[in-house]
Length: 335
Ligand code: AHG
Ligand code: MN
Ligand code: MN
Ligand code: MN
Image (cartoon, rainbow, N blue to C red; front, side, top):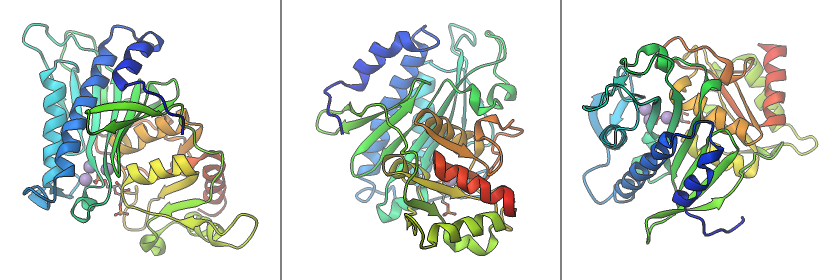
């Protein structure tokens, strides 16, 4: 790992002119996410000490039991982005519908919308396993000066201007792209600053790790079943190693560093899989492609899928390019 002493703040300023849009709004937006991430990090770290573990007692629109930290992180990211008057709209995994933001002085003058998964892998909090935050940024498509509409949120992933995640792990990292590669920053908790620790992150072309919830094997399409058997076969560099944390952010992060493939296929129980296109798959797919990886639903590039609803789910296969291509071959042949 290359060591530099550059902070995220310095990196943002240095690279501002390289962004497609140079008004500084996108830089301010990344800065706000950085701030919210630090606060959530603080809360996640002391979760075992204060009354913030466990279920919040509500169910979200996805039909999942909300954890207290789901609710906390959701509120915090929305508040930070709203108070700083940076975006014109937010959609979140934890909210039923999108939120339109209008500042008092300027009527709907911000051009970016954000979609977030405030806490990814939240079922892992109580057992002290890494969780994350995922975010995705688009330029609005409706005219400035008007309230945002659903159309602004239902854009194809290829339209993203930025995407990233925070991983609250053994150390806390913020990893993001604005379409010019992927860079990773590690938080120094003593100082409260993120430092550029992983410049220009790249998926190895191929790898030896496959990550899938094999408990669902019986419900998977034949193509996925056969691909899993292929991963386990003794031949060449196989069998591969099986690693599954159950936090997309953590599984993705490990596979990007070590080389591997992540699969959340559709099943006979969940016809579209589990992961959400707008909050999870699109941002991870953008990061994957920017890091020389690949993301697909088995047949189609994730970033080319036309969204039809806010909380849409899609099958997700993502990781080292050659491994994803091999899984797609199996899908085409057997499914
Ligand atoms: P979230 O906690 O944001 O609802 O996301 C959970 C997702 C993802 O993080 C993870 O990879 C996947 O659900 C795990 O699902 P299974 O428990 O079905 O394997
Ligand atoms: Mn959830
Ligand atoms: Mn998630
Ligand atoms: Mn979540």
